[in-house]
Image 1 (tube, helix red, strand yellow):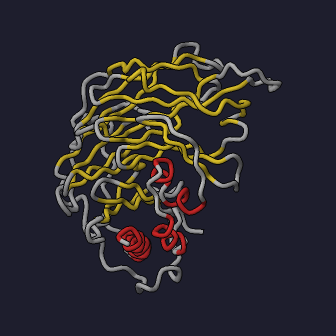
Image 2: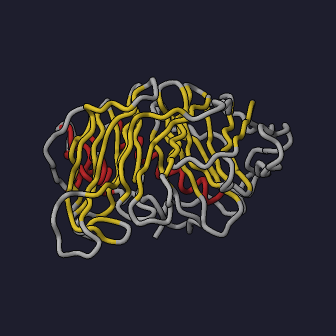
Image 3: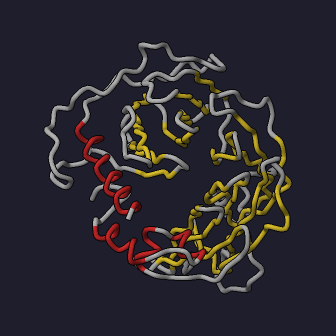
Length: 348
């Protein structure tokens, strides 16, 4: 029942985040500096909070919480639109120990990554991406670098970070446009490659803004999910579209044999008819596409990489372990106690 204990420890982190007072945030650095650093005084440990720690549920959470799973840790990430500070806290998988509460001023957290016992945090202020490397449980980044780029996705690819950039053929305002996918790599300490390399993946976007949907990292691979037009005839004036999925290898090249197309449907503004909440989830070398037929409907999971499987649906497994459901390895008897805890990505 290790998974039940881990879920309980993650739930406990919500109380800790809610109860902590504000530490000194990492300030947004000047855009004129290409690779700014942060001084030792820029970040401080979180002080004991104003609120007494009470059982989960009795403390109102001031901001939504997202859990990003890693190989050895998970991360509680919190940021509310309109607030200038984003928060991150690491949770060790082995023993549930909490790392320091980190605050980033004027930036959105776009990725949190465990690097052995260390942590790498990627943030963006809309024009630049910055990557900060924290040694152990340090409150201050050992190194931080920035680059003036605006990638669509930041994800782990092997022992580096992959910044997925899109080159959209002119005229960009056109409803359909050709998209070439490139990758610029960066170290977990914020050392960025000087240029972007084309991956060999390209597709046509069906509508303005409908390009990359999601990404999921596996060992030595990065799986991408995107929208593309579909040949299916429809009465909809927008036409039809589908979801495409494929893999970028550790060398940054797209594996053409991995390309697949799923769920041909009528195109709607911002999505597909009868297909909601599409996202990728990876675990144990398997990537699953998770979605539902309608809002409020049961979700279903289908393995899409490294091989294509059949869609499966089970309320408990799809909610807690969709990748395991798709791969046929989930155990609902162990997952049911986790679901009984009523876990949520956000309060409310």
